[in-house]
Length: 392
Image 1 (cartoon, rainbow, N blue to C red):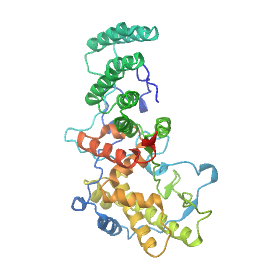
Image 2 (cartoon, helix red, strand yellow):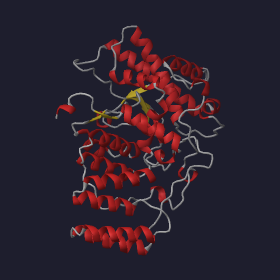
Image 3 (cartoon, one colour):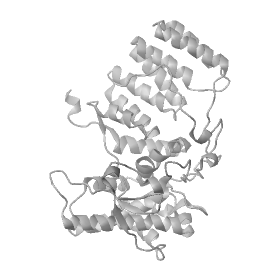
Image 4 (cartoon, rainbow, N blue to C red):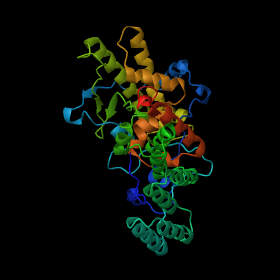
């Protein structure tokens, strides 16, 4: 399906980061996917009301929100752009740090010896001299003082290009186990597993690759066409705050089988969007609210998964009350209710909203938080297809 390359393409370092850049240097002040209200950690359906009540106790001074329609040319945009970062800003995101030692992302420049050996290996790959290529890649790995994934990925890719599927699976799996935050390892493993007809394992690996690179819509598109994979759409926030501070209402989703949304449903959705926006403004204006949910004093506002979790709870509680009063059901919001029941609202906020604007965010998760994040994506965004696909 997805063709692996001999080595992962080089990417420009965001905002000029160098080797050993830490969370603070990219504007990330640390990460808790959702402390605040640790007593609410079970996150059953009733916790949505509890979370919403906790937020609303801090919103007394927040003015009523006016929502403007999104211009047609912007209707396809996703993400809470102004709230998360702004496309020209390196880092307005707050991922509360779980790790005790601090979160670090290392960017390593290969030595000249490594580059020479990798180039020799690439030339051998081009000439289909597989053993010679692997010897060169092994030499590159031995010459590098710091363990990096590149040479191992190149070895695994050589097996894939040679058509030795099982060896490719083993090699990619080894790299993925040692470099769990390298999306190319999971992407290559998914391709190799699929070539070896390990269909479920392929989807699981692709899910992790997409989780680490949520802004890579091309990868998601390629995975979605596989008959054994199901890629579900993200559920965007009901409103977004642009960089000028104006709240805009995203276009309402028309339920399948309907030509239009009724006036009553439109008014209910607007009230739901206002509840969400008012919560978001509360986090911007209330240091006490930020501290309650981020778990420590936060002087200046920055978006966080904890905040997104809280405001999504406010949004969902409003939706539930409207649905109980006769509002048509919304499949996307019903999916969010299921996500809340499983305790994944924080991970959903990171994947659906935050990570698209700040691609480094998943890399800063500690191992425990990363495992939960992977579990969310594999159970709610990139899944093994349960029906239909297994007939092919």
